[in-house]
Image (spheres, one colour):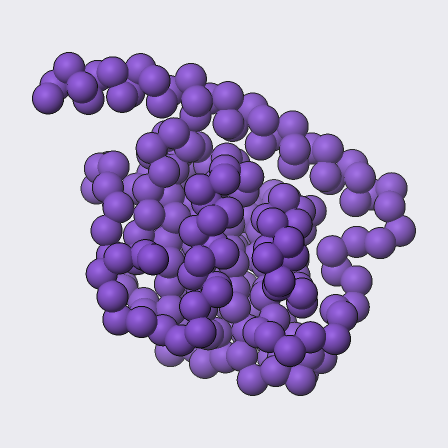
Length: 219
């Protein structure tokens, strides 16, 4: 058993490091492309019939960080996207009401009753805090990608996705497992969660569910 675990670590470390480097290059490329192209991810949304998706980046991040995920979702029928951008800061209590205001604006613009939120790192922490403190009534689903869990609050709306080699927001307890509404990718780091194929699939599955299911596994 110990030998198998050692082999798994040896195999996954290079994959995780390679994934982080690839994700870093992708994030940098998309950031530069966003500065040069006239159309950005914050353009007015198209007409749609589904739940809008609000993307919340991490500390020092940018909305272009989600371009790979957005393309993946668009290829599977998701059509309407909004963003929540903010200046670099760690004041979650201040950011939470700003996120709620943004959600209300998105619902008004899209003519929708609810939104789905995908937050990377601090973006996910803010959304989770908003829900845990009684706000976020218009959040239908939440996906957090590499978002540190400071308070052990279980939210029925949330799917938490972690990378086993994430040095900024490792899995709770430091164990590699897949249970409940928490998914740990064994060969992924922090930035890799924005581009890892299994992370993209997990987001798609969770947002694609028509209704909340009180299940112990992610379908």
